[in-house]
Image 1: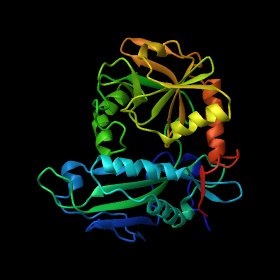
Image 2 (image 1 turned 45 degrees about the vertical axis):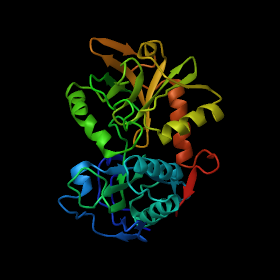
Image 3 (image 1 turned 120 degrees about the vertical axis):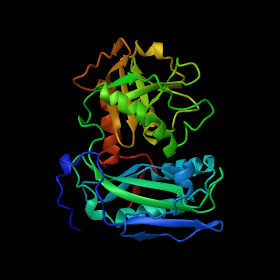
Image 4 (image 1 turned 30 degrees about the vertical axis):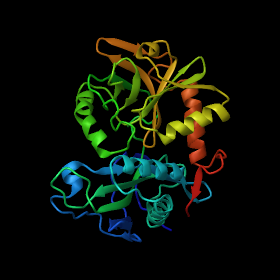
Length: 340
């Protein structure tokens, strides 16, 4: 195996076309066997359901090279479960779990030269997604679908890596009450793009969204769940419209079982945040990004951990979860899928 000649420590969080991608089609009530292909382009009808009514769900996960050269994936079984549930909510035929996991194995093995080397700080980002290919013009689910998986090597999601970021409380809502906020569907992210552009133009890293019903409880950011720390207790906002982040679920387990910290998963009033010690954004892309400050119009919430470095608990959580992902710390049973 010969790694690609890339500057792994400075590739950024960008798309790089790799060698292989997986494609499987759903027709007449069944998925075909699926296969790896070379062509990165997708050809669909102009009236395909994805183009007309945004029938699409997706996932994100990473593969890592361990020090011994082994290539592994972090908790893909939970991604399989989440995309299955997301597809059902959007009235799409879900991809069976074993088919999903086999597709991940195939596409990572097909792109081993693109998996960044151990110690580079980079990883292979894996993007599984399903979308409607069937022709529709009336508002209804399509009758054919395609499931694809592609990969791209990536560096840190935020340019500063684990340097603290600044959140802005958004005037927009991320999701509707009883809507699709807990579903990983493209339509949710499309809704956030305008708010995201305004946020970046104002000089902030990310939006913090409050609950759409009362705008008094913390939900999540445009691309990550959020967590807080107070008196060495990890506080995790809870809501029916928060995406069930796999990274967040892993952090909760790590906090309780590795770091022996107390964890509270509950609705969190925004007013409470002013009294918290630390904050962080967590997700597959960012892993954990410390938050140094939250700006709510004319008011600033500055966390004691500051803008220079992460607080002690966020640092421990980050070091532990990345240690597990990179093979430096023993993982709980079933968390690591050994691929090659």
